[in-house]
Amino acid sequence: MTIYADASFIVALVVESDEHRPAAWRWWQGNDGPVIQVSRLTIFEAQNTIRGWGVARKCRPSEVTTALHRLHRLLLEGVLLRRRVTDHRLFPHAARLSQFHTTIATYGALDILHVATALELRASTFLSFDKRQRELAEAEGLVVLP
Image (cartoon, rainbow, N blue to C red; front, side):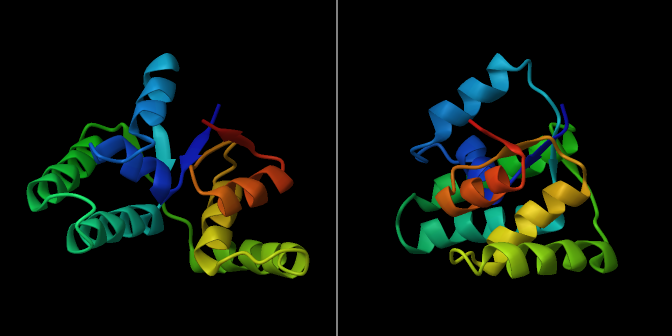
């Protein structure tokens, strides 16, 4: 099983107050702690979300710092495997997804880029709590969890 996670899943792993944290950890531990592929986009979006939650007061400043440290530790420990997808391979996938799916429903550019990345990395499983990304990933034949 090759697994790719979007930012919503990563945020749930590292932010104590995230509503999806129990489900994220339950899934990860229940699957013997598999390695999860992520992209630079995933990491950037997760970091930006965490910082934004601090500004919006969805979590305390100390929780922001702790979550960013947890994210870094997951990368260092190899729980998260940062994979690179070159632009000349990623954007044709993204363009196809947009051309085919955005004529039926509205998908944001980041949603499309995450699913395109998962497809390019040949992931079989897509981890997300984002409803739109989940729909798009399922439409492309990925197993969507948790």
